[in-house]
Image (tube, rainbow, N blue to C red; front, side, top):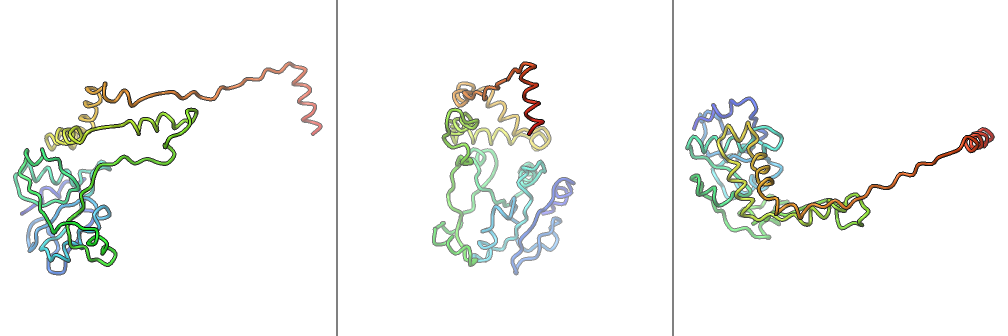
Length: 238
């Protein structure tokens, strides 16, 4: 396939790539390609993929296009463009809502089942199995753990612990944010979807928010002219 028109986007940059010894380096024009190319986001976020390809002898290369979280098009743009054009492609994604598989023709590729023993060989380059099942988790600094009421972080910590959003709601926002490719990239569709959720779910998120913090009281001292003179006298003596 010729992806020249996609990679010609001046804001889209291939961050890095991986080529096993038996494959030719991936070429956007399709010329000379003898292996299929897996589109991924960031090699630092997916260090096991080259090992999986090498150890399973897959005829695949990998090109990394960025997450898109820095404002660049990244992997989301590449993937959505391929979907809109109805062209087959392979991508590495940590999670895709089930509804997306109903909207577009996506098929999950299953590798040999994950095991802890398999991933324990990562340091020696021996990973040859699928990825583990992951779940969405809330993470926060210890500074926002349960604190005293007078602590400035108290209400923020309460917000994080009260925050609850279902997988179904998260999936729905993901699907709604896909939209049209141009709209999603140019008009901050993801932001608009999240903003719409906040506007229509007041009863859900308002109990998460509280403001019990009271700033320390400032004390203003008033001095008479005689006191000021005395203070200045002692200061000059000192």
